[in-house]
Structure formats: structure tokens, C-alpha cells
Image (cartoon, rainbow, N blue to C red):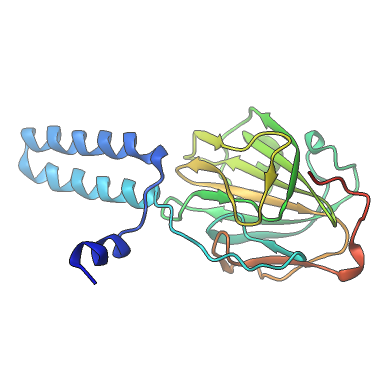
Length: 232
């Protein structure tokens, strides 16, 4: 195995969305270094953090049609039944919700928790409260995807946080997503909520660390299959 090949395997891929930010941080480090040399090293450290923030490591997603997979790296901050936001059109009855809070050191690539067709994508402007607060689900800026599955509709909501100021969604309504497929990114700290239909049981605990695209967030009962769900 060549040295070049070993280096490529050791380096974590960077998402293209991060290139301009890494370049800006590096330029800032150079300018600061011209003013006072120790500032260059501080700027270089911040540049390294920026590159780490936009990392996009490969993940091995469990292949099972009854699994709901974590949509992001982070900490499980909420588990419980709540009424979903009205824009999801999932009714006014409480649904099981599992939330993943991402701090500024987590990988911020967002991945599909289930396979299925995107029924709707809805963006809502809002506040930038601390994403750990329960009320952030309804008050913060957010982008929601409702995915049709054989078990019913599953919603995943990208929520901006106290530091996050930009939600990116690469997917489009009508597209077919595969479990673990990348669909978005939130810049600089945020949260994702996953709303589950009846028959799904969470398999994580509060405070647990999740790995996006790998950790099994919940599991459906075998008798919850809905044969009339249209998936294209």
C-alpha cells in the first residue's frame, strides 16, 4: 500500500459546502498573522475546527426495513409523545418523537432515517433559541421532510439553534430516499426531530450518543406494515 493511499484513507472527507468557509478561515488566519504572528496559530486552529465541522465521513447503515436510523451525530435530548407541528399534516394527536441535539463539534451532515418517498418539504422561519429547549421544536426556524414508508409517514425536522443560522436541504419533494442517504446540513449547532407513526418503539436512551446513518433510533413492529402506502 502506497503512502499516498494511506494518507487518503486516514483523511476524513470534507463536504463541498465547507470549502468556502475553510478558505475564509484560512485567509483570516493569514491576515491575523500579519498583524501579530501568534494570532496566525490561533486562526489556524479555528481553520482546523472549521474543516472538522464540515467533515463527511462514510457510514455503514444497518439494512433492515423495520429500523429507523439516527439522522445525525449528537446526543439524544428528547424522547416522548408530543403533538407534531401543524405544517407536517400528521394530525393533532401526540406522536412519538426522538430528538438529536448536535453541538458545534458534531458532524452536521443530515441523513434519511428511513427509506421512502418524500411526500412534502416545508420550511418555516422562526427564532434561534437554544435547540436543546423543548419549545425549539415549534418556535425555531426549521425545515421539515415527511417521508412515506411502508409503516406510515415518518417526519424528520431540521431545527436551527442558538448558533446555527443556515439550514440546507439537498432533497426535493417526490424524490425517493434510501435509509442513511445524505439529505441536508445545518451550519454550526442545531437539532433534528424525528416523528414516528404508531408501532415504532424507540431503541435509544436519553443522553445516549448517536451516530448519524448508523445508530438504530427506533424499530417498527412487524404488524405495522401499511400496504396501501404509495412509494415510487
